[in-house]
Image (cartoon, rainbow over all chains, first blue to last red; front, side):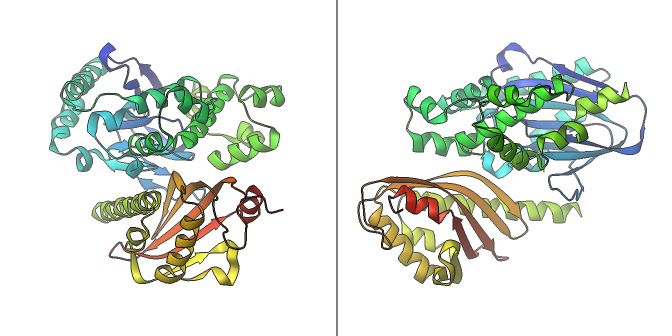
Length: 275
Length: 148
């Protein structure tokens, strides 16, 4: 199993968080479920392996995701069901970047995986074909770098105060007073909220909640799901109290924190157990 | 099968757009624009009001929103997020405003309220909204306005 994150070309770094390559030399003979809490980022996935299924509900009604797709903001934990050949390249975008580059209304994409060709049109077809024909991952990265640089040079919109506010929430891991942030940025609440819905897909406050859960899950993963002091963690994450923390965690992941520690199927957990 | 899935997705997109338009009209305090997004016989259910909260969008809905806007002239909203499930689109919305007149028996003390609301829109095949249910914590709402 091979999973690697790659930093994009410098001019793209304001818009692209990273690329990732996920491949497996051997065929995965038994279906494997991987779950992912909401990350606060959006993505485009080019799949040159077997198609996989996804589910965003508690009842695991898996449906095939399109081979190449664009995914908006996840507002709850989702699951992947992978089997066969795993081979894909993902572009992880900063929260407002897809709107800036492609002009899409992001609230339309929440919790969705839409076929890339249906959304971006014919221009994406040669890119998809060249990625399949590429011999190395570096070639694939170069193809994507060039495509996104071309889009960046030709897009009319430029990152604005909404991009700045969303990236600020990311950098503070969602632990931020959004009302105070709006005051400090001298932005009108209604205007920022409208733009946020268009550019990110949710409200600034809701986005901060998503980002905080995402960060919390990454902290727990880094601790290899061994939390010695819950109170310390809850305090660090800026929750009012344990009750608030449990309510928030359960709302986004569908599991209580303690259950999640013992029973999650996150990719890093799977990679750890498969190596 | 893929075609069916894509068609379903396209319907969802149109419906989310309708919800955004509803709350945009709400922000502009334009009740006619809000009501025009529904079929003529669309129903409404303001859940915390029980049986008194059930009726037609263009009668009860229009009346209640008119009274609300009259009592809270700076009434505003924030859409937090959506959830699409079949023909239903659930919108999680924050409604906020400052009271300047009596509303539903609550005298004005000039207080502000900010309240999480859940709006559930149901759509027909033509993507017209056929029903709306609205839920909120009414106790918290009245407490914020100074009614103990």
